[in-house]
Length: 103
Image (cartoon, rainbow, N blue to C red; front, top):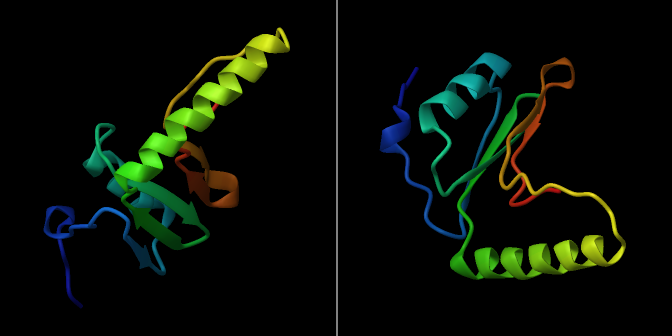
């Protein structure tokens, strides 16, 4: 068995790494070790973990779409709150996702 530390893994912008057979506990540990202030996004589903690093173009598009959604919500007089790239996790279904932005 080969063991790597997270600091040994680099994900270039626009690329992704997919890891198989990752337990929920390992997923939680990876989230904890990576911390909240990072450029990568994680998605976990029933043992499969995807780590991706968005391109700068993706980030620009994210901001434009977010601004459009905010304008629409305001125009419709709907209450909303922007939560940014919050991590949503459901241990009971073994699923975790980090959207770019959420409302």
